Image (cartoon, rainbow, N blue to C red; front, side):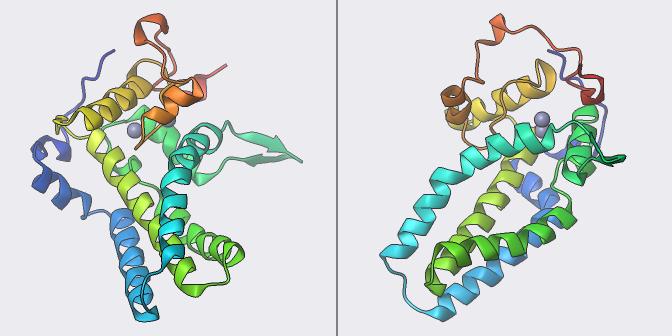
Length: 221
Ligand SMILES: [Zn+2]
Ligand SMILES: [Zn+2]
């Protein structure tokens, strides 16, 4: 499992404050942080928290890790589709293929901003459909925005030279590096590694053959 990388802007990032400074120099984390702040402001303007808000947050905490796993396999690793003479190849999938090709290039680590912008109305509509209570909907939307920002932060951090200290982060770091440098068909979780264990995509690395297409998803059979 070779993880050698060329020198890049990441070389200066070995501690969390440096990592955070570089993180917030990128458009996607800034956009998500701004979206989250607007939602938190709207929620605090709307009134006191109630039990329903706790339910919305818990729902997101349970749902998010599975969404991450499913979208990683079925959207980010989606192969271009031919349909009625057209090629369907979403920007998120193209960017993720570039991310596998150049895992140390920060231009491909983050979600494209246009994808985040497109998901904001989806987040609004889903919560509008789930609940009639505006406060609970705002809390749910804010929880989704916070989860997305956390996903961006953790995924980015696994691509910096910052070395994991906690056992939890070490397990995320190890899984994501195995995904990039051992076999891209496993280890799809980004923030909650137990999901891979639960879904059968966290095998003993010693039993998994090294994939020749980790860096070149276009070369998959
Ligand atoms: Zn990655
Ligand atoms: Zn991947």
